[in-house]
Each structure stands twice: as C-alpha cells, then as structure tokens.
Length: 421
Image 1 (cartoon, rainbow, N blue to C red):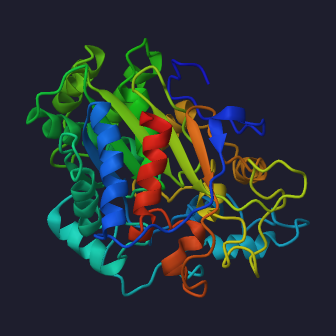
Image 2: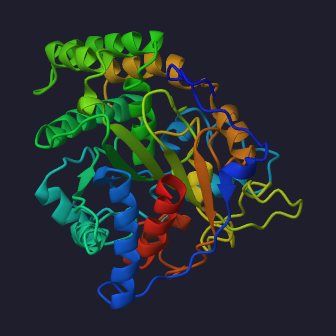
C-alpha cells in the first residue's frame, strides 16, 4: 500500500506478514480493582504517558445490526440467481449471514441505526448489548482509572458511538462527524505536535478510522477533493439539519492546512475490523490491528483464516476459526441505501473506495482469507470460546470478545507493547 493511499481499497494479500504479526494466546486478567489489575494498568498508563499520549477514545457502533452486510449480497443475487449453485454449503452460509436468521438482531430491540453519540444512546446500548461488541461507559471509566494509578500524567478516556450505517456514504459521514468531535474534544486541551491521541475502534468502526486516515493525510490527495465534492453534491440534493456545504468547506480547509488537532499524532487500533478500505499512513502515527484468530489450517499458513468457506452447522456458531465477522464482512457486503440520492452518492464513492463486481467480488475476497491489512502491526489472538456458544448475541460469531472487561488488561498491554514499548 503506497503512503499516499488516495482512498484506494486494501489489498487482500496472502503473503506472510512476517515481523508485523504476533500470535499471543489470550489470558484473562485478574478482576478489575484488585491490586494485580491496578499494577498492570498503571504500568500501561506509565508507558502511554512517557509517549505523550494525552487521551484515549474508544469507538463502537450497534452490534446487533446487519453486521455481515448481507443486504447487498442479496440485492446482487446471492440467494436469488443461483450464484451459490455448485459451491458446497454456500446457501446455508448466506442464510446465516442475514439479520433475520443469524440470531443477532431481534424485532423487539428498540435501537436502530443511525445512532447518535449522546448519553441516552450510551445508556441504551449498555443496557441492551452490555459488553458484547460495546465499550460500556463503566468499561471506559475503569480503563481511565487504571491508567491513572501510576506515576504518569493522568490520561483521560472517553467513548464515541458512530452511526452504524454500514455503507460508503454512512461510513464517510461518520468519519466527518468524528473529525468534528475530535476537533471539539481537542479544543479544550493544549495539544501540539509533541502529543499523541489513541483511537481504539471495534469492528466496523475501524472502517471509519481507515477513511479518517485518508481524510487527514498530510500528503497530496487528488481523491480527497473529489470525495468532498461528491459528499457536498449529496448533501445539497438531500437536505438534513446540520449538513451544509459551508461545514464541508471549513473542514476541508482545516485538513488541507494540516490544522487538525494542532498537529498531534494520532495512533489507531482496530479490533476485529474486516479488511476493506486502505490506510493512508502519511497522515497519522502508529497503527495496530487485533483479530480473534484460531489457527485451524493444515498448511502452516497460520496468518490466514481457514481456506474453505466456513461450514455453518458447526464451525461459525462455535467460533472454531475465530472472528467470522472480520473474515466475511469484506468487499461486496453492506446494508442498502434508503434514497435514490444516497444510492447515487454510494455508487460514486464505490468507484473511488472499492472495486465492485457483484457477488463474485465478495466470494473472491472471502476466499483470500486475509486477516492482516498491508499496513500496521497485527496481533492474531487465540481468544477461544469465552461465552455461551448457543447465544449469537453474546459471541457475535467471534466478534464480541474484544470489548469485555475480562479482556481489558490483555488489550491494554498489547496496545502498549506494539505502539509504545
């Protein structure tokens, strides 16, 4: 991946990442509040403080939506035109990906995208999803308390809930909103080029960070102006309060003049994020990807997911290969747009972000079995089966393990080791 990525799609490489990848086995930390927990977290806090990290922001969305993006697969004929003919188990796999049959979403759920980043949404998410694919307010509070136990400067932590609209327009708008949030967050702090800000994103929120990396690049970006033009045209055609061309022009000026967060370095961590958008490493600091990965291949290529398509009867519900959302929600998946104007903008963005050739594109990308993006460090973790395998709303098919309190110390130590050792 070139440094000036220009919003290009990530490469699905099967090459060995070499020294960029490590393979730890998850070990649950001691319960929160005990002395051993305080010592471990304070040590991480001291590492972050020495590296001038001035804040940690946790991002996640709604974990019970169409997390596999099966709506777009259905639209292009995944189950309608016989594409699955001749491929063993594909029809049952596609059926399991759909929200109505995968057991993740329920009709009685009272939360629907787009989500807002406010206290009421945080509370509702914490009540419904608890710690499965959701950084609760209590988790973030405890993380901050843990980092501040030692001798380093206290590091504030906060959470951000993104809209959870899983298509190009939705994710780009989320990146724009997040930039505004970060600007406001940074305005109350004396940030400089000597400071660092750590962003930790679960699942599809990592796609928002990937787009963010392309938006804030300090290099030349021919695609950035085109992206803003498409978004401005869509906002003009679809009037919504808070959207304006003037807002985009002001933001574009800040990015082009490298005024974002007063030049502070931004470090990014993704947790179970499917490989989709490419990363522009010219515009931010350090990058780490953490993936729930169980090595079940017979050819020794342990950095790849299972070669064959997953078998739904036994493999996916029991998380035999790890995080199946990370493996399957790749190029070709998405939710559907809700208006002709949004669909046109989505098509325009697709030409820049992601080559799209229908159902076969998804099938090809899935079979590449890529776990590690081309940029950044990668940690492939043997999390194992941690919760009731009979309840998809808890395990999220291997995607719900990263945000749990029992993983807090492990995650904190992996981030400190990879980014700030």
